[in-house]
Amino acid sequence: AQTVTQSQPEMSVQEAETVTLSCTYDTSESDYYLFWYKQPPSRQMILVIRQEAYKQQNATENRFSVNFQKAAKSFSLKISDSQLGDAAMYFCAYINDMRFGAGTRLTVKP
Amino acid sequence: DAGVIQSPRHEVTEMGQEVTLRCKPISGHDYLFWYRQTMMRGLELLIYFNNNVPIDDSGMPEDRFSAKMPNASFSTLKIQPSEPRDSAVYFCASKPGASGGVSSTDTQYFGPGTRLTVL
Image (cartoon, rainbow over all chains, first blue to last red):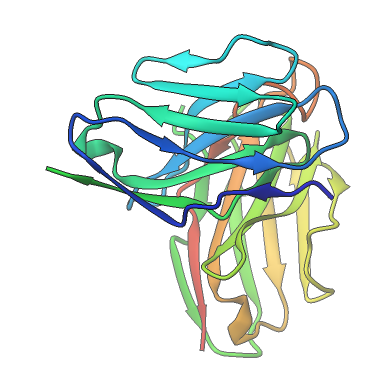
């Protein structure tokens, strides 16, 4: 079974600063998909960004970007210009078998 | 579209009772997923359906759990008998199937979840 590891249970960032959340995964497949989800206190799971493994270019969605290192099996999420509304749990997901990391709780300080 | 609808939002029951969680996926979506979220184990996939057919139920913890999808617009997750360790938030999610199967860039759309407490 594939494993997804988020080594940072909690992270904190100052408003307007940049923060990076880590994710590593284990796989023997060459073609796969990785997602980052956000779960605010409302409990709703919201897709933040997605990456196809066959694409070398890192995905970007406004203030959110990833650093995808296929050889290292690393998929980190960078949030730039952090906002109070970014405070949430963030989950990294290996989509081929719907496996999620344990999550990182992000706190944004005003 | 109203999104994925789950009911009830909260359920409190006593050990040994039967619990039924309900889900209405987004119309036109081919895939439906059931997840369980706990502090200890995080978010776990229990089972998923494609066109109403169960494809992978390897995540179902034991025989007390069962899931059905009698038609494209309705699914249930049943626990009988329930135990305190079943207390968790249960999510239902759906996704389109047009772009190449369960492993694709299409996102899953999650419902609001059902918080189950078994006393």
